[in-house]
Image (cartoon, rainbow, N blue to C red):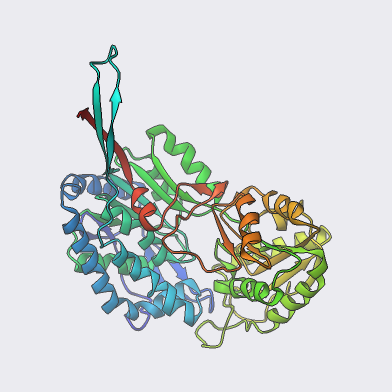
Length: 488
């Protein structure tokens, strides 16, 4: 699909069949032009339950397939995607508002395909435990007891995914889930589901059995709520806001749903007095405008030693001046639009609230004179930890900066947050950065670098989520642990 056909008929994928939606369609808007680029299916709650039931039916056979068979399916899917997904770039860029570089390398290429390829390779999680002596008891005679720990598929997984990287995030959920022997129902974000529906076509082309992968879309809460409530769904894998994650946890408790949730973030970047200011500011700037700041791992709270505070503010101001805001289809654009008009207004509200609370506007804060939903890269200085813009995730190109007078205060400021997903430390030597990083309450900490290790466990402390994915932790997250023991 090299061109965008506004009148293309999109359908749900349920039980291996393309299905018309019960509740009509809704408009998908290009955040750059604000024009309609398609009409996505509006699934009913009953169709979400139908998808869950289809996944349950397929589960019995799929979990009995060998790891090799499942790997072969995933490898074939990766092959199909390598051939077909470059043709999706135009429509995925239009529905996400991603810049040309991000659309080509992160939305339809790179890690999206790599995740299916990675989980097509054997990952052995089973473990034999050495026999241990057991004294005679009321439970049985004395002897050596051996054990084997196995990882069994959970069953049916509902993957509820965010709008910022719709395909890559889906791949990160369903690839390990399928590899572990689960079947899945995908519910993509309402803002940009069309690429995920194209993925459904690729899954069919790769020969997955009917019902192993199902896709339902919709603009409202009916379909995802039905999946959370369904007795045919064993696990919810969710990426999104903490508020919705909390509701999923509460409602899913009634059926004892297993959970994997990556929720909000408010990443801290600590700079010591001997930090490389230019390197740290380059790191901040590279994520500041990255996908218009719509990335949960962004270092949006800069906690800078007072002795280099002014230098850091001025360096960041300079970097902001090089971030071209504009049409994401232009190859030199750095900052494209945010996803919707509502979200643009929300981000602007964060900035206004920060200024009202006493923050100093260094740059940005204005609305670019462009047709779409744009926010200029914004830097707020003289911030305090009680400010709303410091405490909550704006999910836009907004960075706040605070001063500290030593490592202990820096750590305290970093930890003065409800979130703990991904933080960073820039210091003169890695040993000191490591020591500070160990004290930060965050699931991940980057040391003098913002480049993550893609096989390290990923997830958050506190209100940033439950569980870990990526690498072997990713496949482990979609399993139940079973121990078998015997007299050796």
